Amino acid sequence: MSEIERTAILGAGVIGASWAALFLASGRSVTVYDPDPNTEASVRSYVEKAWPALDELNLTDRATPDAITFVSTAEAAVQGAQFVQENVPERLAIKHSTYAGIEPELNPNAIVSSSTSGLTLEALQEGWRDPSKLILGHPFNPPHLIPLVELTVNDSTGSDVLDRTEAFYKDIGKITIRIKKGMPGHVANRLQAAVWREAVHMAVEGVASVEDIDKAMWAGPGLRWAAMGPTTLFHLGAGDGGLQAFCDHFKDTFNGWWDDLGDPRLDEDVINKLVDGINDQTQGQSTEELSAQRDKMLTAMQKATQHFRT
Image (cartoon, rainbow, N blue to C red; front, side, top):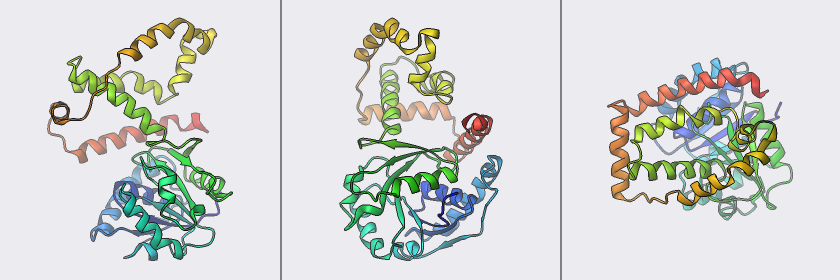
């Protein structure tokens, strides 16, 4: 078990609130800071709604659901915390300002993990006098249900920070990957950006409706990708010959497809087409209703596959 018991959340939007629920479920105390005056009400509501799924996934055995406090400054939030999850807006000026404020208040052995989805670790480190405590720990939304966390360190990171961070995340039910070379968007966001680019291209070209393109994903490769990654699945696709045989057989096919992939841009016309398509698909369902439906399916899928991952 990780030695970390006291945590802090900086920025309590959807990502921060989800982290808070997971930290509480794992038996940690959580101190939350967000400048929004409605933060306490919104986070408590989020935790309450998230709790049944966490319980169903057997993540609440050590839970301390009442061990949450709310403070009025980031500096107060990090005092005494052993692990800080930073989720402030994706603007370097805001992140750097936050770091400048909290750095003098951090415990000597504290870790600060940034949830940034697109900024590089090097850009974040520019906001520190001593960036050794900082690690990039990017989750997938919602963090309390999607297990992935992408971790990035470099030569300026403390020697034990990566191992301690991995131990903590593993203890709360996460699956981590180590990014060896920082790139904007990390790994998972770049993968989904590539897939969405082609989905947008096909919608703009009239290949299929937005709804049917989405359906092609969740009813087809999305199911397989939830079990194994694309390279492993293609390794299985050629039987005993494995990936070598698959590539030998399909290299010209894939090279042709790659040459034909689209390169759309999210201009006003394209955005309007996508918005019209999603409105047709959702038929007036609110984002709250759709999110609840998503979370139920994610919980069911995670529960069904948990024992295969241990």
